[in-house]
Image (cartoon, rainbow, N blue to C red; front, side, top):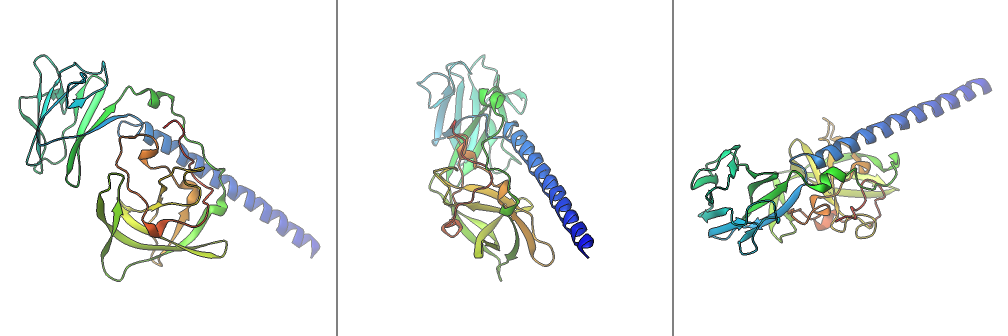
Length: 293
């Protein structure tokens, strides 16, 4: 009997070690994908500006006299102008300034944003690339520098040590009828996002719930906790959760909690955690704050 018990203990330890090793590998692979995403052309590390357009003519270039001032040396002093009329944006490049729209030279009064376009046009000059974004009643230019020094030097953010104790079995409590919840962003705008339900799980004997909204094919959680402004970003963090199985079960893994774009750049329009997602405990897992910004 003693030998059987000893064998059981050995097997238990072996499975535990192997399981932890596999989990650590999973998190390391997740971290690599995260860094790759941040450094990609559509990532958040190359943002170089965010400019809100006024109705009518908006001049742009590197000269300070422009309505929209691009980084010095990145584009001619007076590169042209955008025109915003009734939520339609056109571009006019100055003579000799070879601004491109969707990889072709910009045409006079070319439409780069409207309800009719399948997607906003992609514009560029040298390493500068920009698109038009819309946030409720505001229309602006999101500028990227594909030669951004931060992209070249970034290797990742500080993190809490990987700890599988911050991985929880959870149940999604779905609403009885389709509904939305208000989410406010850093601009002070409040939008209604599709509410998918409450994730219910237990931390140290305490029942915890987080409201989840829809983003792409996953549950999206915007949450805050007692580490904010100390060890983690002050305005909270994000977390993706797989959609539940047929029985409503899923996994909440705080080791995959990550910083919002605003932790890396002042040129983002991040959503903030709703009051019900402000946890009264310290979640010592996932990404810490990015101190360079």
